[in-house]
Image 1 (tube, one colour):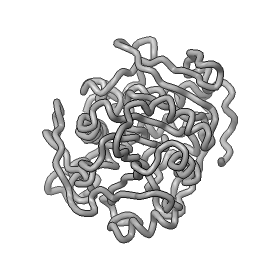
Image 2 (tube, one colour):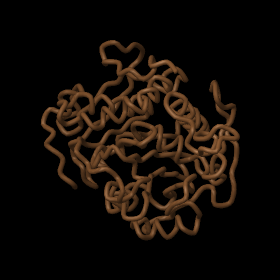
Image 3 (cartoon, helix red, strand yellow):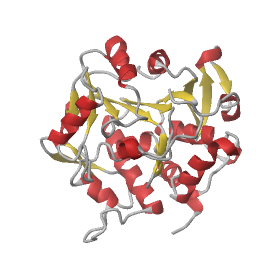
Image 4 (cartoon, helix red, strand yellow):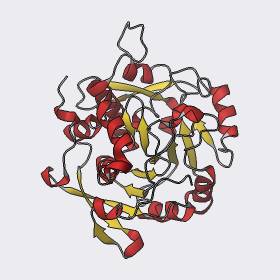
Length: 328
């Protein structure tokens, strides 16, 4: 497969329009709420909060106390966390196991809807080359808006897990949709789809969901405790060595994931080496180039520092004072 779509493209070489991405260094419940208020205007009606709730005792997931505070002060009674069961056998493979894991990890303060608990539904994929439709949790139809609340980190197969992976894998149901993304028909290896093709399939799955919600979708990426491992690895995740950065918010999925990647690349080599290596060796950057090809957003953006009077900054300024990793 071509390496063309997996090459990091410096900002000055990108073309097209710019989208707004908000940024705070405040990694706390208050920081999360400040970002949410900047991107919540179109989140009307019944709100689905797509969150990776993690395997049992996972050390790096977004703290449940942060999300509880967001629900109590900002989201209200018409919001629910949404998830789907996993494709692999683990702590969230069945609805029964999933419910137990949710309780262990502290997701007990609001409704948690396992969207494929009662079945699945096919959503159209417009303009894809792998799919014409994607199988998602049937309960998705019960929501008017979607907030992708994402822990940005590495991923063993995807290179990195941002908003795109959170939605593309996380909304596909556990038995049909995730199999469509990960496994060629008839293969005995359930993970046989890798590299560029996997990134493209993830992105097409995401497109089915965000096209369904239209303008009623927003994105938050929390850049803390960024292991090269996904939260699906739980306590087996690799140790974190990448510095914590902050929280991003946007109405543009490509812009927010590209900004997150830019922030990693803007760090010193000693700080970003592991995560950059993970992204590049897994062809994770193909997520970004393919989202652009699919018209899912802009890879150019205006990064707004809300900590300092809403001034425009670049990625280098945003990570200028990052400190060596410390678990928070």
